Length: 399
Image (tube, rainbow, N blue to C red; front, side, top):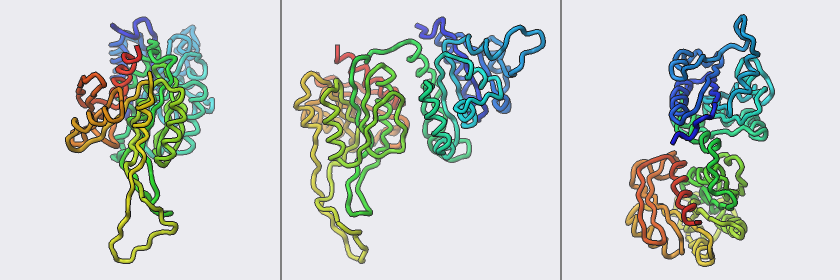
């Protein structure tokens, strides 16, 4: 079934190297049944020609603010009123700056000022530009005004560097639009509690122990749960990630802080998805001063941290609790043991020996084990897709 049948999408293409990916975005929108018109900025035409989009959309591509002689329409007003939604992919820092500040010096920015339909935007820029305070201020301003920002991925950039800022894959961009317009709200009325990221425990005033978790998996779960209508609380350890739209974020650092915040939110939660990589050990004593190097071996005594998920699993009642197992050996046996010990409803196994799984990547390879003894393995896929697989299971379990 084509999920965007009878939907009209205006695709805005701004001037970045990722403009070539907009061709695939257009193709995917068409495959879902959408009627698509394309507006290109002058800079976008430096990277790709309008003829490519015209051939795929079977429509004129709009590039000029001022209509041709004899055109009775005020073009930007007509284009602003025509669609059910506007999607900008790629969206550059320059475009965000103009849109956030009400500037309109080309056709696309005039359309954005005049429209009243939902606007989706997929940022594409270098990491330093994306992290710049001015750019983040502009993004926050647009979020407040109702823009849906499709967070960029981390990976190879045009400069040859690698980092956050690469435009999200066309499949994920289109999926975000589809789910919003198609009205998939199967978690409406549910409070979804997600934990994410790492924890940290101090050794002395300068040093601490932690792990490699970036929080990507948990943030993906939170993003998808919110998109599917859930009321989402995200308890996050230290991470550089931006909170997804429409998600309540609680920042913590230590295991104790993670435990307190999670227990407080769990009181009225319907579902807990525990993706956080919580430390199993912490220093038994924290040095009051910086430990000096003296050429001798240093020994630190570690004590186990409190595994509060066992406690939550034991008193969960009718609530659904999903855990994660990150393993390097005897993976399936260890995951099943955790499932039983912590009274979980589902455990998601990440085997670090499998390529494409683990920390600091946008993909994952997981296997599900549920309370009824079922096993389901998934091929490598994006963490957003893994999140939807988890939430699909949750929806079924809640029925």
